[in-house]
Image (cartoon, rainbow, N blue to C red; front, side, top):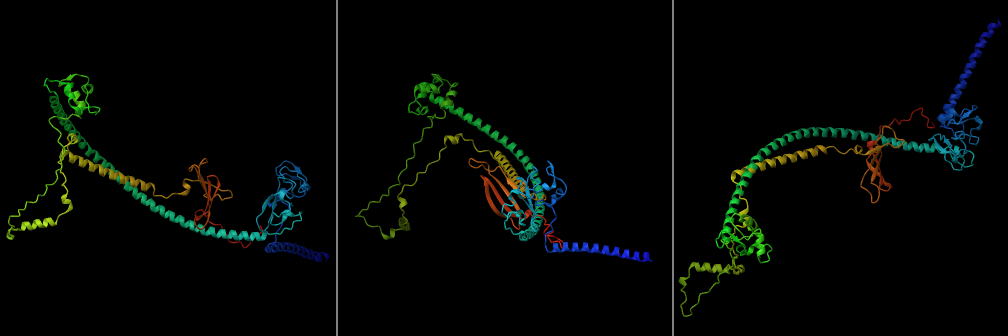
Length: 505
């Protein structure tokens, strides 16, 4: 009978113990949830000044090994205000080690590290006041307020990033459309360029074909003219020899040549015997065969006796108007004798001008100068036609070449400048890898006076419009420009708060 009663009692007792454990767990869980919902920080036990990421190295009750592995010490020597480890890792919560660092948890805000020398120095560095636990400084926990302000800034930046990213997408679409349009234009221009190149080559052939007969015709004309000019020169030389040979002995002597003062080499008004001998090549006299060398020296100045210089035209004053003598005894003209011609004369007198008293300009008959005689005569009609045809071919060829150069320039400059194409770009620290176009550097500019070549660094940040926010010169001839532009805005992450998010974490 006892066994029958005992068995149900044990079963009931086991159930009650399980229920009690469950209730205890639920109580602890509810307490944790309640604390989290109220924003109460949940401290995980670890030595003061140790970040959560390094908690596993600080296990109470176990020997502590310096983080640099230099030595192992008992755990009770951690934060004992005496520096045992070279890296200062045994004193994360005191100022004992000069190279140590203290971790501010700053629940509700951003955690941070401060040098261990700032621990208990009377200045509140951590917003959660944990760095001044034994200095007597009155610190106020401002982490929650700082966290709220930072979240507002981040929310605002997230909105700017989102809007900037949308603008960036629009710019990308516009750029793609523009690129497609320009690519189509380039394709058309390349085709036109090909046609122009073919036209240029065809016109080059036409030009060369037209220039060959032109060249030959010009050469023929020049040779004919040179032959005529040579004959004229020989005739003049023979005539000059006869004129200079005063005694007709078949020789031109020094005295005979000396009579022509216009041949004076130094133009001093006197043609000396020495100067004449110089013109005659040192000879005392020359015959017709050797006169050619003398003629070369004198023909530009020699004046033929058969063509004397004409006197300068004399301007004659206008004929004086002589009035007829009037005979007082004679009878006056009868009125009937006055004709219409006399009336016209009277009208002419009324039209008198002051300029009528001036002498009329002397009209000079144009004379053929020596240069005109020496000039090559005009081309004959056939040669002129060949020249005009060749010139037209040259003009057409040059016009087509110019059009081809213009086409090349249009193709070369049809694309706009891409800023990062020729600039040295770099990444700033703490920037995401997928947003590398944040810094442009332009180098090797014009040199400063007794200084380095100018350079400019351009920093870009996400913004709703492209504007310059600041310019400065941190170092001599090294400039810094800061821009905001939607071109560097990245797709924003999901900024919606999680229903189970914990700000304090």
